[in-house]
Image (cartoon, rainbow, N blue to C red; front, side):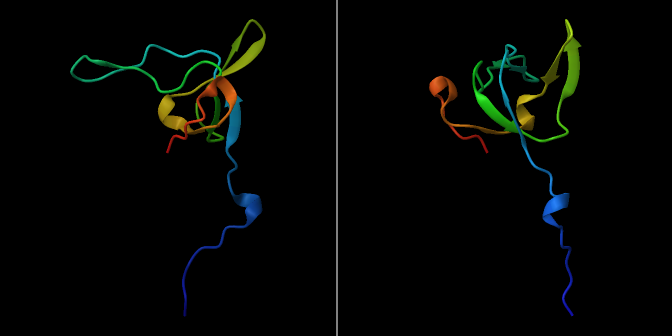
Length: 85
């Protein structure tokens, strides 16, 4: 007898797509050094559906996410086109 789990396509989580509108300075490591972010303003990215925090600013909703929640940087926008992960 075989074992396993079958997940129907309707239950699979689809990644979300968005454009980077702003970035922070980077991540401060335990030793105090600042590691700059890899993404840039204008990059098109894929991220998980439930990542980040939605914040409303002046009536407009924005999603704040950590760089570690980014699944990929899509080619084209901003000329980067580099894949991540």
